[in-house]
Amino acid sequence: MSIHPLPPPEQPTGLGRLPVARWFVATGLAAVIALAGGIVLTVLMIEAVRDAGPRPVVEVQLDRLNAALVVLFVVVVAVAVGLAVIVRYTVLKPIAQLTEQVRQVASGDFDQRLRVDRPAELAELSSHIDAMRVRVVTAWRTAEDQADELRRSNGELEQFAYVASHDLQEPLRKIASFTQMLEQRYGDQLDDRAKQYIHYSVDGAKRMQLLINDLLDFSRVGRVSGERVVIDTGEALRLALSNLSARIEDSEAVVTSDELPKVIGNRLQLTQLFQNLVENAVKFRSEAPPRVHIGVRRAGEMWEFSCSDNGIGVEPKYADRIFLIFQRLHPRDVYPGTGIGLALCRKIIDFHGGQLWLDGDAEGPGTTFRWTLPPAGEDE
Ligand SMILES: Nc1ncnc2c1ncn2[C@@H]1O[C@H](COP(=O)(O)OP(=O)(O)O)[C@@H](O)[C@H]1O
Ligand SMILES: [Mg+2]
Image (cartoon, rainbow, N blue to C red; front, side, top):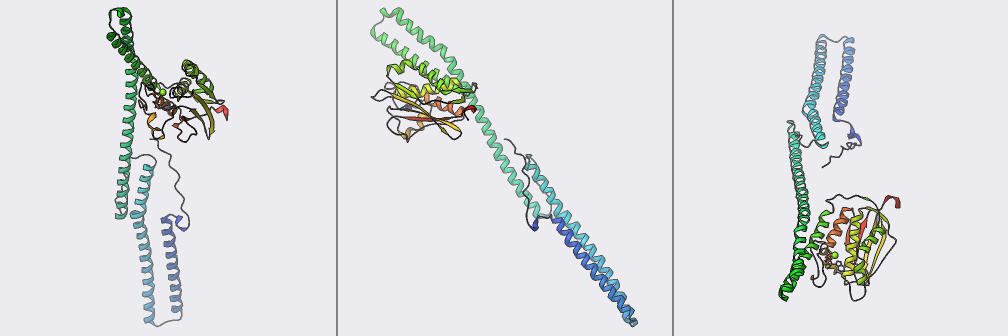
């Protein structure tokens, strides 16, 4: 976790802004000056009485008064000095010590213990502050450890998904192709049931290939860092449509789009995004021929894209579920698929620093997905 630089302490206002030591010095000096003034006045009065030639008994009392004044002065000065020393060693020094310790903690040395031994009040205060420090630091370190652990296990999982899906491809390809060869080579010796079994095996192997390919795409996003450049999203859409051209033609779908802007992103991933969304729009069609529109508008700092279709629609209560991996709303024999497409799209958009969601308030039948992407600097 980063440590912010220590902000300057807030400046106190009003009379209280002077340090306590100066208050002591100022009031002490005022008291000593007033006392000295009083004593000088009294001495002058004594001298005036002496000049009047008092009786000897009064003279003696005047001498005593003189001596008493000197003793008083000395005692007051001694008490003032004593008080100053006491305040300095029992209040000011411990406060400065505690302030220094707190400053060190605040500037990032979280293991610095906060402790002063005296006076009792400050010792208690420092022990409470230290207990607070220990609790906060322990909670923070536990959270850090958990975040590290999570990052590590996430990384391992991604690595696992990648390796598993990568390494499974080869044996699967073998199963599919050798089972097909079995049918081609020995087809005339097999009865209908055996051919049906072979058909099931090939079908299963192909489906698993699809799944593994999708899983591989999914685990690649974010794992392989992928270049980030200025991408013409119109170009990415065109590429996606050309990959889907057979499906679009078969379903007589019409795909239109606004003038699409340039964004900062990864070409392959943004093509995959368009491809998955348009593929869904065409696949989950209603009776009418599919109409798909890719729109865009500016939303603050980002471009907000949309993909709307006139298909069967998604109930708003499934708005979150459809983005989870392997979550599908329909049986595979009605609408084929692996349930990875939208999870992949969300991961791609997350990776680009945007958001992808189902627009539950969109007008008309069909489905509208919206997502945001950061603009390329040259648009601004
Ligand atoms: N354009 C759409 N119209 C209707 N339903 C959709 C649309 N796009 C996605 N869905 C729903 O969301 C589910 C998840 O989509 P996706 O992750 O692409 O998986 P798949 O396409 O393999 O079924 C789909 O099974 C479908 O039920
Ligand atoms: Mg899909």
